[in-house]
Image (cartoon, rainbow, N blue to C red; front, side):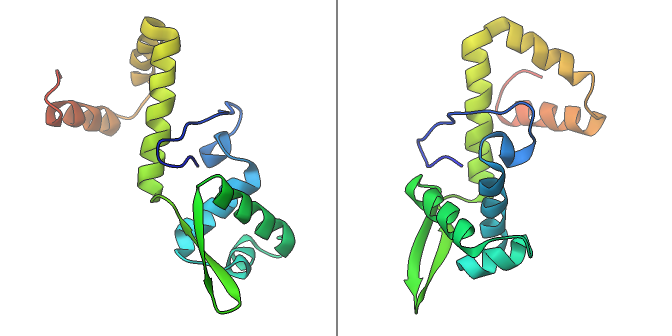
Length: 140
């Protein structure tokens, strides 16, 4: 995850979902925090299952705080963690950075690839694209 105004430093083409931009455990923890809303480290460990090591999860969650992706506050003897952004805001920011990066680096070639990919996506996604273009006052 990137903090508001931050940028993606790595994009792993051979992975999927959040693991493309975060480590595997960071991605799983981030998803858990979004799902659980204000979890403790123990809550996240419970969500991840029996193989989750408490100290490892705590270390990664604190690293995500330092990166600006999570915030934490003390409640009793434990810390509760909250995401810095909603899932939707984060995904919008990441996808925008990826698309802008492709267009900046590859220009017309990237545009051509976007068009080529349209042949492979379901009709309802094509219609959703047309609707987005219409709503934004563009061509389509």
